[in-house]
Length: 376
Ligand SMILES: *Cc1c(COP(=O)(O)O)cnc(C)c1O
Image (cartoon, rainbow, N blue to C red; front, side):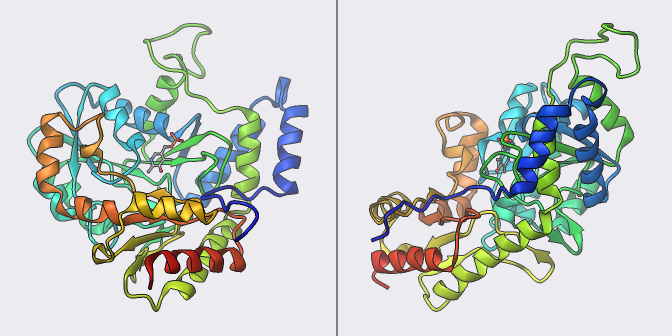
């Protein structure tokens, strides 16, 4: 038995991050008060190859702003995958629209294009594909469907910075792409988010909506409408800039951690790990294992037994349509019947420790624990 519990997630902070944040805390005021914000946003647009970036307090606020800027509201429907963190869907309700839950693909665990098509009604205005655990859905299909049905796309790339689909970066698809820099994510600012877009109109609308409805160059204290206050601080931006300057190193380490797990678990037929198709580069935010149902151990019991061996984990997301927050709505009831893959996979999936403090020995310990619990 090991002495300290192995955590499920956590960042990789070096002296560079500490220096940047200290500099922002010491000097990021007066005429320098927006310097780190501007540098962070500029570095982000350059890395992603998009025109505009808006730094925000969270990814949740980035999705909220995206919906507002697209003019989505009461009477509209927005399609999300049933398997994701609730932050993907909650902002749909904030704007008065209705979330519709599509099934996921059995291999990628991301939104299934077939299910997306089936969920479209005359009220559908947008789809929010999610790059789950660092993987990406079949973007060609999703873009084609969106074009045919005139749907906006908000790409939720919160879990996939550094991932690619056919050489294009996660977060650069769609009318907007959004990121989270929560402490558990691949790159962090403590709490934070980013909204990306190539569309200057959407960009300008977001700038107005995130700053109490005032124009950057307009008359002072002259608010054009009632809006929101969604901003990131210089200290957070400084941390983000340092992390972004190390993004290749961060993504490579995530891929390395996954390779270690794969090496240990590959020969075991009862375990399926994250998928990487030929057209995708997956940055494996969370190494995830789906355990064959025949082994007779659901995710909650498995996590309990892992916990006894000092290994933290997380359950695979529950289908949103199953949660008390949604389960009684008409859309959720339909999803419960329709989304066979989501309901089949979710009970048997766990996220394995994937923090940046993982090394080969820890991965071996986690895998030995898992294999002994499963009697493989
Ligand atoms: C983490 C996460 C979010 C929310 O990010 P916050 O910064 O906490 O608002 C949204 N979508 C997905 C898929 C996430 O994993």
